[in-house]
Image 1 (tube, one colour):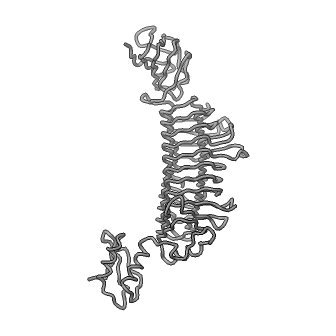
Image 2: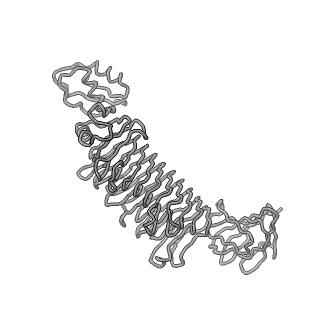
Image 3: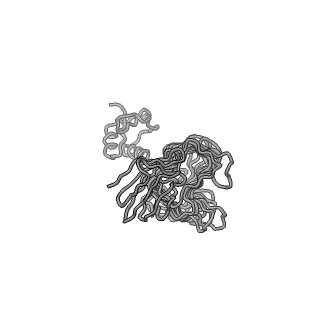
Length: 488
């Protein structure tokens, strides 16, 4: 039979395959076969070995090794940097860390490395220097397909400049996966992504008490990055800082089901941003929660978008609570969607362009704001050009505003007016051509509408809408034209 060893996670499968081998003085032609029958490379040069030795070597190559069996210490005092680097350089790729405290500073420049802790809370990595704890380094060559999971990164020292996880280098540094990781206690950055990183995923992170949670900048490309279930709290500055440097290399970065809470703790910083975005191709926030990210009451932003090159910003189905400004788009942005969000306890919910930069050549084109529930109307500077933008809601939006004791309700970013008080409505303020507004009455109220300069009824000079009834208007050429009436 051919000299083939079938490599499977099932140990017996490996054993049976090796038992069928005919050992000779030269086993250089051994092939390793995976579960699907694919050849995955020649075996390394094997001298005459016992069958048990061959099994052990294959297990070392394809299964996790317990680092404690190879001289690594989990006492929190021994510096394991050298021995971990030696294991990786000697070809051990899959390292298992039982519970304990492991001290090291490790720069990884190889592909296919996997670190797995026994448990996320009790397998703890602490840095041994003031630079980083874990670094993925592609300065001198490509590295891909590394996996890190189930451990805590904790800064037990006074290293205020140390990063928990870092990326450096502009060669391929791609297709990595990080999951089930806690980062806490005084790191400068929880994740510092100055080098290239593409097509990688970060899931189930808790980042706490760092200077900044996530720092994405530098020269290397950042594309197709996914952050799922990321919780960042108690940072001194930003939960997220992203600066593409006026480049098109920061593309398709998404944050899903993330929570950014109680960040911007340093009151000496004059302007505070929970999430600060500068110069990117596409960034999305989906189902996120951003709350109370400042100790200050002024000049605080939940999500701020600035810079001179921003292609697409999407903020969808998220809750923003408790900053002075909810969403502020100050820089140039070409397209995007802000929809289905709820923004409360802010002084201004959504600002398109700021007073300080009005008339600065900013352009928001093909930008849509749909279905948001706001405490304040959309604020847009008159000098901001919003070509082809949809700045109001579509007719099927569920966003609404109460309009009680107000004959001229403001309908910016609003389609549905609900009221339980009785008075005439003589106009709707700040409408745009094509906008639909529906008025719905409940309680014992009655709303009276009359033909005037701003309202044109369908078939009468006056109509009264009562409890459970509704009437709809469309704005066209500076006039609200009745399009339907639902009366009993």
